Image (cartoon, rainbow, N blue to C red; front, side):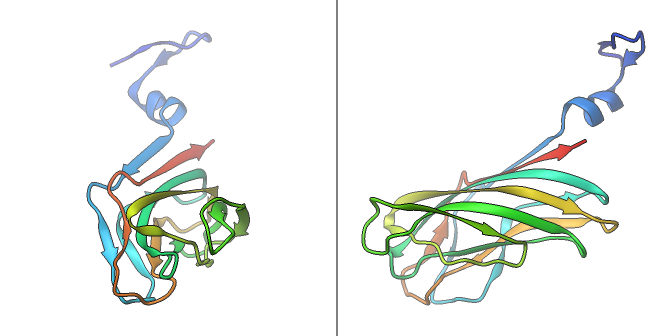
Length: 170
């Protein structure tokens, strides 16, 4: 079914809409996920998508996290298809004693798992991440992975409604 006509006179079909207009993939987390007493990095159950070969994506992630007051924290990271690169930056609190700042911004790569703070088991904190994913000749799953920064009996959680947005760059 045609949706309209391009200015050059060609009809705009469903394939055109999918490849030229709708370039965003939106993944939201439907439920909380927690890690307790573990610093072993694990893949998130929800925040992932199938990345196409030879494609670049602009990635934006809003993590809603909570956990032990400062002590446990979270180690966020990413994984992707063989040969993929992901250069990203995160905003995080740089002062380990209060949550009044300063906010730090650190450049990361696909293999990075930096330590970031949490703000108490009942206090959600939003950690924004953004970057460029470059997928080479091998397609595959790109996703979020994480663990506690320090093993703690208070669960560190990535909370429902955290989201990953991937925009295909063409």
